[in-house]
Length: 277
Image (cartoon, rainbow, N blue to C red):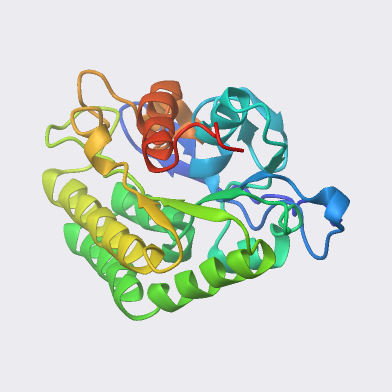
């Protein structure tokens, strides 16, 4: 099987307070890939992007893809040890990356596949970068509007393709598609250096993204929404389950509580413990 593609990590210089330098993780591709023998099949396979690999809850066990033992996928695998585990999720993965590089652990023996994908199709990193650094609100608004147009016109077809290819490779699997949380609380804080307009536009795009994912996923498997679980736990809330900007590489991704009390809870609700396997 091919190795993971190396990640590209563009640094973002942010003029907040005393010129804070941050890096928002951005990656090119992911995971195990191409044809696999039956011996390579895994019963539980976690695919897709940084919200599945576990970015935000370091340390990382995989230097290329930022895979964390604290990710919801790794936690679910530990809770269900009878399921052999294939961890292909990789920071920055798009739908095309999943299809090209992450299907190697799938096969007729696969019983469960989880996936978070779509955010990087929209240019998650570049849109946040624009909204954080832009001098004028209109620049952020235009970037978010472009992402929302992509959600409306292009993303559903991309999602259908990736979900269909997953099930073609794993015809006996249950597919659980998880959504994304809105990032920001209504209030301002240093961890989210954006005004109310910019926070609102980004949050509204997340709502639209989840609607597209949920509407598409129901034809292929189960949709597990997470946004309601993150209510009152967003960046700038008193008990955030998402990292703020000072987390540098882990900015705007779930922390351990977000993966455990948010994502793992959503997955377990959609697909209870594998007692029947």
